[in-house]
Image 1: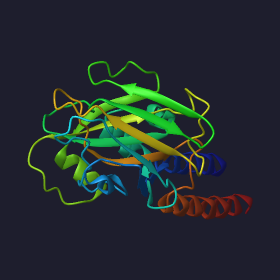
Image 2: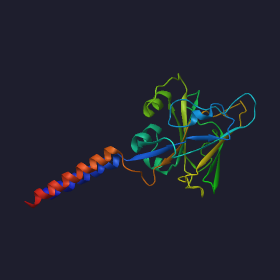
Image 3: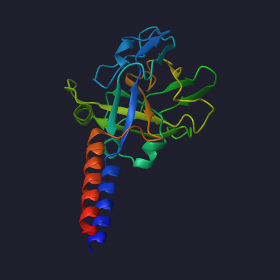
Length: 241
């Protein structure tokens, strides 16, 4: 009977630990070769301050983002982040890049742009069109979030009234030879800047998602695991008496 109790307790603790798994996002920390407006506002963690890939010139606007892993890196509960995005956890685990941009409409789709990923050796391009968001298998998820839920989850004060945050999740290594975990990872976003239709994205963030393999467990998971080991050892000693 005691052995059965030990087994059930072990399975329960394993279930809790698995449910507390985290994904780590390395946020871009460097921007270069840019003619975007407020291009640095797309660096770091989500804060509601977004870059603008539009002006009155009508010329293409582009910027290169890099420094993933050299700046802010944040761990998020896998289940909670998947729930926020309205996707299942397996889809989130496939992704290795995330971006979000502000739109005046709600709900909305990320605006058009050419995404060029590079690890310094290999490169890969995705021409994303909002009218055909499933046009590339590299885009594993897209959608939009309310401004309030976006701010609440990422922990900043929302100062925007109306609109929404559109997001994209990319699977880079599943569709190319690019190594998204390279220290040299960079992404160039180029927008048409036509002023007509969804051609001028306003990105708040660029992030590398480290979810496969799973990164170091969250502190809560480590604590639960330690308690579980101590409890299991204690119960094993009791069963030997």
